[in-house]
Image (cartoon, rainbow, N blue to C red; front, side, top):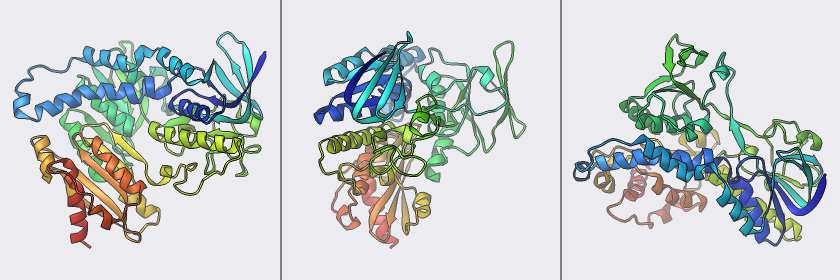
Length: 481
């Protein structure tokens, strides 16, 4: 067993871990990163990048066909092999050479193997050959191990070799029939993708389709999925699953319906990758989410930072927001905080301070790449009311905006703005429609910047663009005041 010391040791080399390590190195500290799989993590190989690559061709084809002149030039259908091939390129063919080169160029030491917390400020790394090295951190250890898919305890489900998000993102062939269990973001996006690629898709969603979104947005996506031939079984769940000798999967639902498929995708939630992290060695429970304070230091059961505050958790593993971009945002805050504490500099952890991840609570942007897309940031109307805010929500028909009608014939969409009536600022925004993802950052800036409504009137949207919906929402808000 060998030992070595760094200022900071990061467990997990996904986007979050990479950003933490890069930030502390830029701040003048040394950093080591530990990874048991591919450097680049879930997003690079089994989530964000490959899944959006799977969806992009169908979105582009839909956009072309919504314009008569351009649509007349399209005579064929999607080529699934070409789509999968392009997806493979974006997943770097599941090789991490480029990511490893980036770490090396950034001055970050890489240790391949399974990292476990051994004691205060120590990480034991066991490689594939069973060799062990002990890394000691002078200032901090950061857990950025992310999450993995949950397979619910439905009788027979685990025995049919179900797909999770990983298999859906990396499949080398399109199944003839795909059953999707789960109506959240992963389930909805993969139902969209595989239906466009030619699969006969059936979706089972116990809690409804996209239940966390504004109802009007979920409803438009449901209508679109049905129009694409996806069969929806909402408000029910599987009670038994089996695969017969011919390879067909049979799914029995609680409402008495029986489904058949060639593959079944389970998209019912995530669990933290903390089961074999050595949490018991620092007074925590293996398998738990890691609770954190305002600067993302891991808290013990007593609500006090572990040890003297040397242990941090960033990204999905702390259960604040399970989104890559939000994890990277946390990583920047964590890296800067560690540098500040190591150099005995002030820590600005007040709301919206440099070392606080305030947006996790107030301004989380998300795009759901279904057809149509859903882009949202901040609260939904229901979420704002649950948070105790006195709000008013206004909606507008996106298809009535001049830029939208120019963008595509028969454009269908809707937008909503949630206003805090006490502070007269926007606290939530949702828009659903074709190609709305690029509208989102304006709303994110308005919410994170707490821009007063009176000032937003002076943010004039260019005509004719879909951004004109901002003017229409403000007008609607004024008329109903």
